[in-house]
Amino acid sequence: MRVFVAGGTGVLGRRLVPQLVARGHQVTATTTSAAKLDSLEQLGAEGVVMDGLDAVSVGEAVAKARPDVIVHQMTAISVAHAGKPDMKHMDQWFAGTNRLRTEGTDHLLAAAEATGVPHFVAQGYAAWNGIREGGWVKTEQDPLDPMTGTPAEPGMTAIDHVDDVVVKAGGAVLRYGWFYGPGATDDLVEPVRKRQFPVIGGGAGYCSWVHLDDAASATVLALEQKARGVFNIVDDEPAPASEWLPYLAACAGAKRPMRVPKWLARPLAGDVAVVMMTEGRGFSNAKAKRELGWQLRYPSWRQGFQEELA
Ligand SMILES: NC(=O)c1ccc[n+]([C@@H]2O[C@H](COP(=O)([O-])OP(=O)(O)OC[C@H]3O[C@@H](n4cnc5c(N)ncnc54)[C@H](OP(=O)(O)O)[C@@H]3O)[C@@H](O)[C@H]2O)c1
Image (tube, rainbow, N blue to C red; front, side):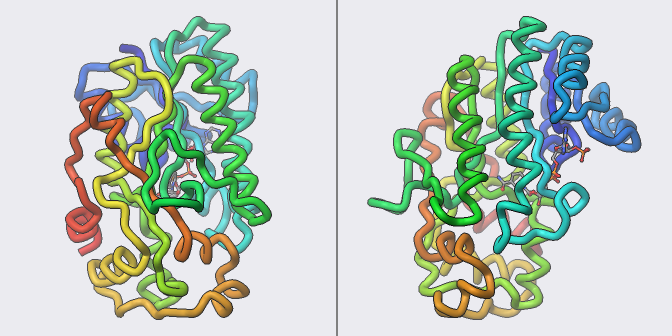
């Protein structure tokens, strides 16, 4: 197939492009920076400079590639695009990403229609953001949490937009868990090593993780099978912060994380961190396994953290 990867240089794009090439697909992959075109070509793709927030740029790039499928992996979360991670002011940290998930998705879908691209796969999110009621592990049937009144609310609205317009267009939304793997957790491991990433309250809130290579293999299956609808792309073991965070610290050779009560964490780390660690809900991958035939190389973060962080 001719595959157009919007955002080919990100942590996931860099693992996805080689898997696509190895499966015999012809890949066009985008970056906003001409300096990164060489790195895309080294991965086996044809590199293209494209600004996902510029409808003309998107339209031209898609028309030239004439792909069989568009894969939307554009975010702006890295320090280069968004500055230092800031959970406390997530609305500001994620402002560019939210635009890529709303306007950027719309531009890509419009370009798909104009060029007659028959299929569309987009990045969604399912880490700790399941609806905060009932059980700790959610399926695709359960709503996501809107995080009303917190700095995560605009991000959740943007995620909902992706789900809505992509499913209506007959595409697939892959709701990835929290990424780990090459380059994905550097910004997390640093504060963990400095003991600046504590367990909040009892750490009862759940989170789902996924290794980048498993996220990439699910993406390959979704596009090869022309999948439609929403899929949770997470590992087999959703877990509370009280379990995964001390384990991650141990794998990274750091001291055990501190524990801080909610009242102290709220002014220091902000509402989003408190919700995530105390009330977060994780996700089930049963649908992706059943319908896509997805098999994980890293069924649990326990094995994956050991390999990646040691
Ligand atoms: N589910 C998750 O846990 C999840 C999901 C996504 C990201 N993250 C985390 O976020 C951090 C940064 O991720 P990342 O390294 O993938 O970087 P990123 O800054 O989020 O960029 C991702 C991709 O989007 C592209 N992009 C950015 N702005 C664009 C624009 N205006 N138009 C078109 N494309 C644009 C980037 O291209 P260029 O930079 O080449 O221009 C890159 O290919 C990592 O720690 C990662 O683990 C986590």
